[in-house]
Image (cartoon, rainbow, N blue to C red):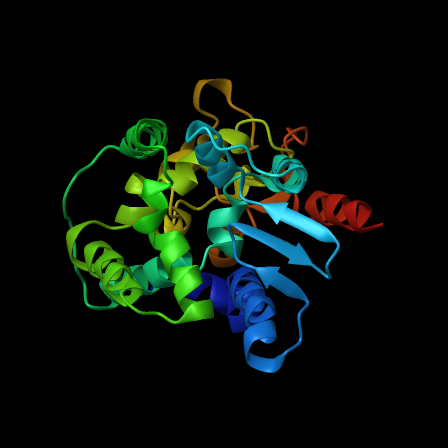
Amino acid sequence: MSIGAEAVAAKGWLGAHKWLLARRASQLGILALFLLGPLAGVWIVKGNLTFSYTLDVLPLTDPYILLQSLLTRHMPEMKAFVGAAIVLAFYLLVGGRVFCSWACPVNMVTDAAAWLRERIGIKGGAHVSRETRYWILAMTLVLALATGTLAWELINPVSMFHRGVIFGIGAAWAVILAVFLFDLFVMKDGWCGHLCPVGAFYSLLGKVSLARTVAVRRAACNDCMDCFVVCPEPQVIRPALKGMDGAGPVILAANCTNCGRCIDVCSKDVFSFGTRFGNKEVNAPSQAHEIASAACK
C-alpha cells in the first residue's frame, strides 16, 4: 500500500494533503509577492529574502545574513536590525524551521526529489550525520569573519534560487540542479536534512519556539510508519509518539519543521498542531474533537 493511502481512504485526498497544499501556496505566494513588482509594477514587497520592505513600511531582514554582515565588520543600517528583530520574534513563535517548510523555495526542489526518489524506488544512499549542518553553519560564519565578505551567499542555494527567480536564473540553475540530483541519487533529504546551514541556523530558534506538532492521540497509533516516511526529520517523531524516556506527546526537537505532513498522512489523526505547553495526551476521538473545538473559539 502506498504511503498515505490509509489517510486518503479515511479523510479523502484533500484531507490527506491539506497542509502540503497550504505549504505550496505559502511558498509560491511569497515568490509571487516578490515578483509582482518586477513583472507587473505592483510593489507590495521590494527586495528579496535577505532584506525586504513590505508596503514601504515593514522591514524584514534575514537574521542569518545580518549575523554574517556583522562578522564582516560592516555595520548595517538600523532598519536591518529592526527587520531582523521582527523575523526573530515571528520564528520564535511559530518555530524556526517553519522557514524551511513554508518559505524556502529550495524546499520545493528537495521535496520533488524525495517524491521522485520514492516513485522510482531508490533506496539507501550516502550516510552523513545530521549534525554536519551545524559544522557547515560555523564554517560560513568563520568565512565571513576571515574574508570580510558575505562569501557564503555567493553559492548559497537558497539565496541563489530566490535571486534567480526575481532577477534572472543565470548560473543558479546549476546549483539548484545539483541540489535536486544530490537528494535524488545520493542521499534522501540530503541538503535540507543534513547539510543546509540556513536550516541549522533557524533550528536554533526552534529550541524555544512556541508552536509545536503534538502526537495528541498517540495511543491510537497503529504503527503504519507513514509519518516516519514522509517526515524530513524523522528522528524527531519517536520520543513524542512512543513516550520514550517518559517524553510527553509534544515534539520538542528543534529540527521539527512544522510541515504538517505527519498530520496529513495519519489516518488515525494522531498528530495536530499545538503549543509546547500542550503536553497532555488525548486517547478518545471525542476528547480530541473537544480540544480542537475549544482551540478554535
